[in-house]
Length: 313
Image (cartoon, rainbow, N blue to C red; front, side, top):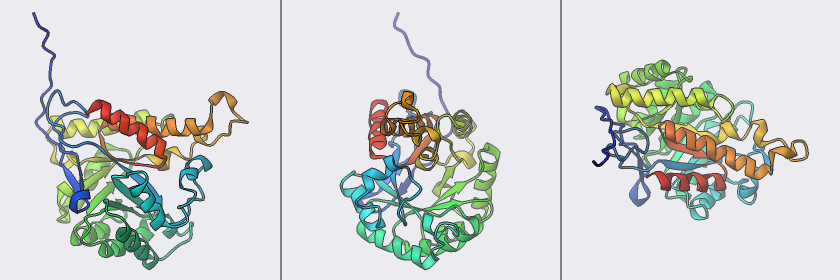
């Protein structure tokens, strides 16, 4: 008697989201099963990995992740072109770190110029992220959203403190929106509801439940993301059916395991391999918990996760 594997069925579906324009536009989400369970249903779109760049040189990045970008990271336009042309990036995430009051306090007009220059230099989709200073982001993200109109970018991150202004601007200019809340499924759902009550289309939201690096609470992150995805699929909850973002690089490349030198901790192995492995393992875990969009830094880690996805799709 042949063995028939049991299969789960779900009533819900993750919204597909398309970013960018022309033949370089990419779509993620759209599945009606748990991550990579193509044997149970439809998984029409591959997860997307965006390379992270910054509007200022990455002085606080560890040397091992700055090295691949040493020749280009002084200029966001050169950096973006390098990612697209040399690293074959499918998408680029521009973090406007220099606009933070404690990191240069560049003006919104400065950010607009960077965004326009980067958009003019690349053809892949652009994700535009503020400095995570809620008050300053309100000003900066509104103006860059207007400057990027017509390019179907992703704008973020809208938080409880500033979502009204940022969501209104993203909606008026035709962009997708990252909705970031503290790591809690109820807070994530509440923020999505509040954004949609403004008239923002629920199918254009991307959930950022906040993540953590391997060894720093990843299990809790995994559980929350898994619960979000199960709520979307099993309960058919329309407020939780948006794709999820894993902003991996910024959480990984600051922990001691990727910064402690080999002289101090030789038993931990080569520093470069350690950092790449840490970013790749964190990213792979988030994919398995339900993330459809990743932001990563080291090219070798991106290649490792791409190969991991190849084996699962």
